[in-house]
Length: 203
Image 1 (cartoon, rainbow, N blue to C red):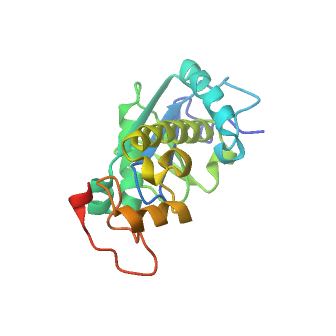
Image 2: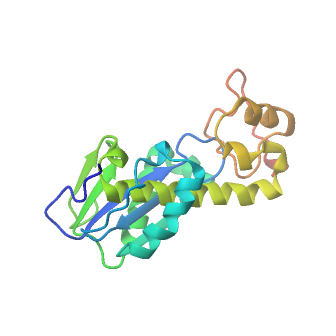
């Protein structure tokens, strides 16, 4: 069973990101402030849930949350500041959108940069331990999946509706055949065995 708060503060926000390992699309982060008495039997680590379960939980989380926010950071930002910094920046921006601001932050993983006047803790596998991180993970995942579904309509040859931008064999073969788009992360190794020409004319 997931725990509610890590700290003694009632206004404790969980935050998590999705899409860090993708070749295309944004890195998406969410932050969620849940009331201390919130419980739902289905809420768990988002990776243990089906897409249908995540989509079922999303409106429940949004309805019951004190506040929530989602941030997409595009590949141009990822390429400029690197994926770790972009992931942290997306989480920070989501937290700063919350109203009220949290008094404490719990972060999934082991890396974060402090926000002024708000203490935080990094928690390995936090999405399987704390409700607010699990809720943030579900929002980040579902909003990013929808984003990639929309991009798929413009670039169906990459099958982002299915692979969501992750480095599947099919996705890499499509990059080999069609080249990269403006939605690909050019700082990533898009094709592992050869140097990819940075031909942005395909975008």
